[in-house]
Amino acid sequence: MEKQFNQNLNNWLQEVANGCHQIATNSTYNMDMDFYVFQSSVSFQPELMIIGSNPGGEVSYRVMNQKWGRERRTANDLGISECNQFIVNDGWGSMRSLCELFSGPILRPVFEKAVITNIVYFNTGSCQGLRKRMNQGGREALQFCVRKNLELIRILCPQHIVLMGNPVRDNLMKYFDKPLQSLLTTPSGGLNLIQETTLNGIPTYCIHHPSLNYKFNTGENQRLKRATFETIFSDK
Image (cartoon, rainbow, N blue to C red; front, side):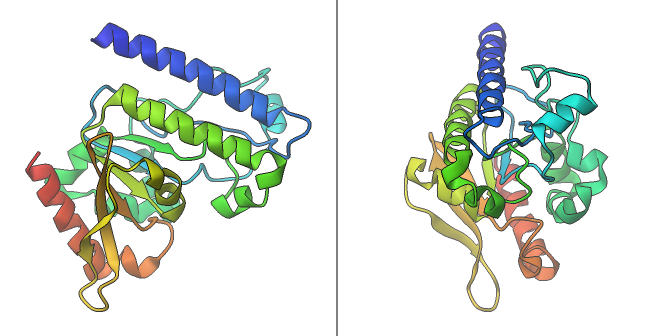
């Protein structure tokens, strides 16, 4: 099983490196953006897979290749590391609330070993930046990355999936096994804090993006989300 997993993953990494390189260097596109996939280690059947929107920054692929003295990004250079980069880098500023959400004796061990990726692998700065490029390679980039995310889920077979932000939810929604249902709402106003469904039979949870929507990611709302996830991962 482990040998097959490693082979599938290595093939997938090669396909992603080649596909992203072709998009980033296509002269008819406006997608000269650096790219990478992971901000964590990668393992088979992790307790948690987290999918965010896109890598931060908006750095040229050509410039980054020159900076690092490389011809291109390869399958061995897609962000796989030995640890959760959000923890190591103190939440990377605006994403600190993600580390706060997955804190405590129940959730922190799960978070430490989570596989963390994005729905888009190109560092477009924001999904809005990608939308502006829809007719200039952005559409092809998005379609490619969504397809590879679905393949990755099948390779990893995570036990739970958390989707962060509307762009991730909206681009994966048609692949959900059933319509989203509200799992947790705000104490006043009844606004969704956590929605749930399944994807390939895997329990999947949608939350507001931790770098945005301050009121949903702090105070009582944050405490309620943490308590809900503690129950989910205590019952695993």
